[in-house]
Image 1 (cartoon, rainbow, N blue to C red):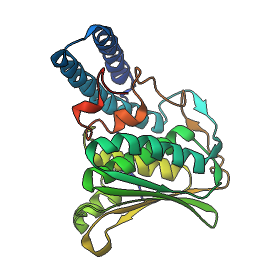
Image 2: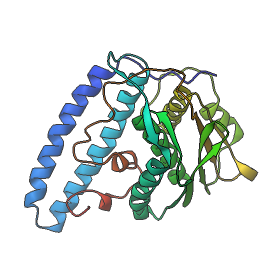
Image 3: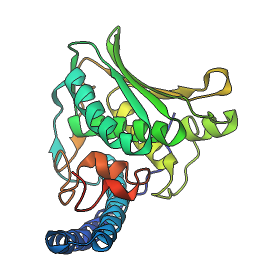
Amino acid sequence: MDDPKLDRGTARTAAELRLQLAQMTIVSQVLGSGARDKRSRDYLALMDQSICRMLRIVERMEFSDRLSGASEARQEPEFVDLSGLTRELGERMAGLLAYTGVELTVETPERLGARAHRWMIRQMLMELVSNGAKAGKHVKLTLARQGDRAVFTVEDDGPGIPPERLAHLFFSEEEAVPDWRRGGVGIAIARRAATLHGGTLVADCAGGRGLRAVASIRLGPVNGAVLESARLGWDAGGFSDELVILSDLLPREAFGPDSE
């Protein structure tokens, strides 16, 4: 089962876009330090929200480029505390999702670790939780061990996805140039992350309502893989990765000088 095509050769464009967004972020921070009236602060919040939304598109481009093997640098997997990573990420995303009225709950074993690529696991989980939060008002993130695999499950209480669309998003072998704004790109990225860890990403709709996405990774060596990666993360210009990835969902109040 092959992933939908994730466009390659985007690194140069993404780097230029990131440079321009960094300059906009500096301007926003300078203006924010002197903003006193509510109208100015509201405009700055809108500007920061737009920057985060553009950063999300850029990060998807960069992530896909790195997974395509275009980067010359190589990053070995490391031992990752999956339980701690899942709990910490869940807490950070739950705090932000409170702005939208979405409740995120997290269940993990006390300890579960694996050799993995931390940045890739985080991105996979953020994409899946973001998708769930767009669909329903209650999202549950669970980590469990099943044999020689760590299994991440993200469930929502939304309306679900018609079978034909579900098959296209999660199981299609069709190759298409992605629209970096679409949720389907996030699914493709999450599936690629699971696959490169010797696992899978599947989904189902129980009773025609809600969506359950299940991503697994191997607990043993990552197939001896050395993945193409220049660094573990990105400089988000002072914005957290969680804020960036949820920027399409969060209200303006979550951004700007008045937010924490």
